[in-house]
Length: 440
Image 1 (cartoon, one colour):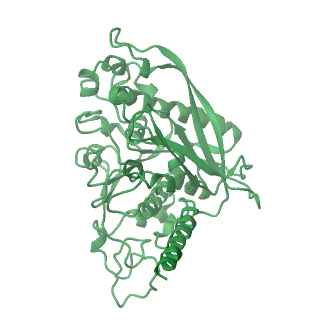
Image 2: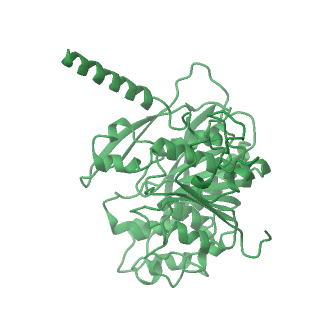
Image 3: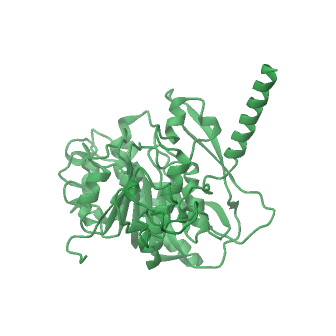
């Protein structure tokens, strides 16, 4: 009997796990805050190419000559967009591979989606969101965000940066130039091509980046590299980077045009790299949302996201912090094939926070932020302008009406963050700063 019971339990766990895994990560669960839910529009996905002409081939940098050859770089971009419904169409399953623990090897995975490959775009003129993944990541691990935003009426373009292996640190400094170059080129190219197509409004463009991609979107969004900083002065590659730094002849090549909002998750660029110096982040003028964990063991919280909040004084900005959260806040929940090895699992999962919970909270705040600053939807302001900085300090008095699963109105004595359920706002902090000189 014990053997039968064990067998039944094993089958039950396996089936339950498979059913859970079959849900696209872009579709949040029942405990998600209000704005995380999917939008009303079907989603299509297609893949296209962008050519970056006459770019420095940063991975071919010659330390002897202190220069890099110029080349045309082909960039693959995955595009999600509001689409016409195709009843009965098979949704996309995304495939990817990340560097495994053994150098030179990869761990493959797949993630279920809800988008339909090459579906006909819905009529409309949508905002554009450019997404930059982390170092050695892949776009397939970001569909929690790309599909969700597309269902809400955004056209979302995620760049396949095709970085060198994560275990090869010799090219890291060179990527400090290539990442914002990729973002700037893809942004300008898609604004032109998708604008002609009538799919997007080029004047409403936002940037979203994770980790190295966070550094990339901050730089492409306006932050200027420090010509006297460690990246330029203390590295051989500095000779290649200097023309693109503040005051350099090619500075504008790193700037993406028409940026009206920036989101950076677990962004790199501070600490020992001091990429922008003390003043470079002040050159950002688009509203900024920073998201980070204060126990990030890959990108130090205090000298990166927390410091960036104060340094980006030229714009209105927010910092959402996961208390005890780590670095893995930008990727989807772990696919089944990445759960048997701790190295593989750590690409995706946080040691403390449930990953589906992180995804839902990220979706809620990114949606509120983009709607407010890209679409100019003033109704989203209360979701960001919270009454208490520490989420756990919010209260829902017994006298206030509301069911168990109702979302906080952040009114009538309820100070729990707007859009969160009664006992679901905990372990978070949201800080807000205005641009220097802005009226309160």
